[in-house]
Length: 115
Ligand code: AMP
Ligand code: ZN
Image (cartoon, helix red, strand yellow):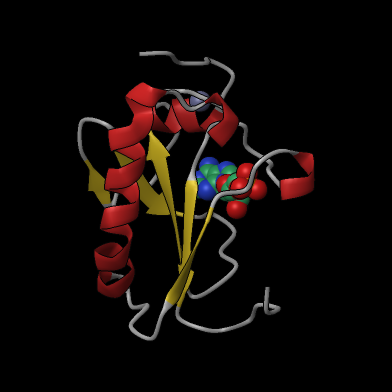
């Protein structure tokens, strides 16, 4: 499995940086965003390092599907009982800051601009 020693999410996956793990399995972990943009703001982070959706490969199909399928339950359990957003930022114009693919789950309020 690929890791990048300079990547903040790889360091969280390895336990070198702290995070409150809400979920962990063999393929990904979930923890709260350190700067929440909503009352519920979770990050779903693959254990393998790849930067963006464009870097995902066929072997990641199940991982990506499993993350999306788990999002509703985690959102509900964490208090987003009236809906939530599932967001993957990609590249500079996608507002991506951490280049280790991750899924944002945001809910508990509706502070967004309509898409
Ligand atoms: P993105 O803009 O999609 O790359 O989002 C990166 C997210 O990671 C931001 O919302 C940050 O607040 C969050 N983040 C950065 N460092 C940490 C950390 N150590 N623990 C939890 N969340 C973090
Ligand atoms: Zn990484």
